[in-house]
Amino acid sequence: MKTALITGASSGIGEATARLFADNNINLILCGRSKERLEPIATELSRKVSVSTAYFDVRSKKEVEKAIFPVLDKHTVDILVNNAGNAHGLAPIHTGSIEDWDAMIDGNVKGLLYISKPIIKQMVDRKFGQIINIGSIAGKEVYPNGNVYCASKHAVDAINNGMRLDLNPYGIKVSQISPGLVNTGFSSVRFKGDKVKADATYNGMKPLQAKDIAEVALFMVLRPAHVNISDVIVLPTAQASATVINRG
Picture 1 (cartoon, one colour):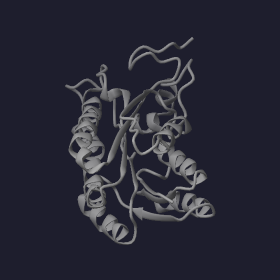
Picture 2 (picture 1 turned 60 degrees about the vertical axis):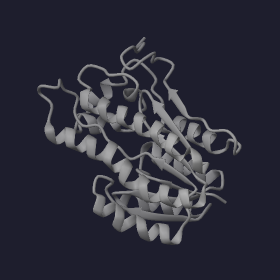
Picture 3 (picture 1 turned 180 degrees about the vertical axis):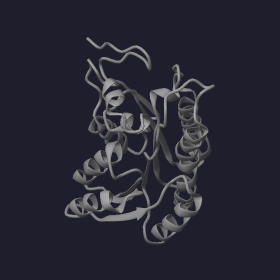
């Protein structure tokens, strides 16, 4: 059986991916910040597969190293799902919050690198592994007021492509999933708990659900050894681009 390490596994796409992987006999290393939220998921899924947990904030290099090196001493990671990330605020560049900018760059870009490097080393040594980076339509297009968030996801797109090039000699698969609107509580975080603004994101249309993205990840994982799905953009039917949405 293969083992997958999933970041941001306590909710949303990470949780949905963990559940679907467990249903398909993939052992799990579930990572997140909140033990309170992650532990019940780990306990439930441990009835199906082997489940380990690690608690850290991907934005902290020290926390990542303290948590992940003991994990790698005990486990071989076959699949890395880089899901942890965040969006903070939606504002023009001249009024944006530097604190929000730092949070997005630290989480979406630096955090992805912090967790990937030690796991990639293990994969390179084995000449085997698969990495799935969760990007965004914001990594393909820039939309008004999305400046730094879009920049962070464009960075994920570039890192994903760079990983594929650098790891090609070692037979390591590298893939990216770039979703459009997904109803995972993402908007609630972006609008700092403002429910009215968060709900308005999905008014008049049916967004993707976390499981829709998890199913794409599973499809990638189940391909034969000679097949790598390098990049997939997944949109709700009502969404044609980052800014074109049919709201009925």
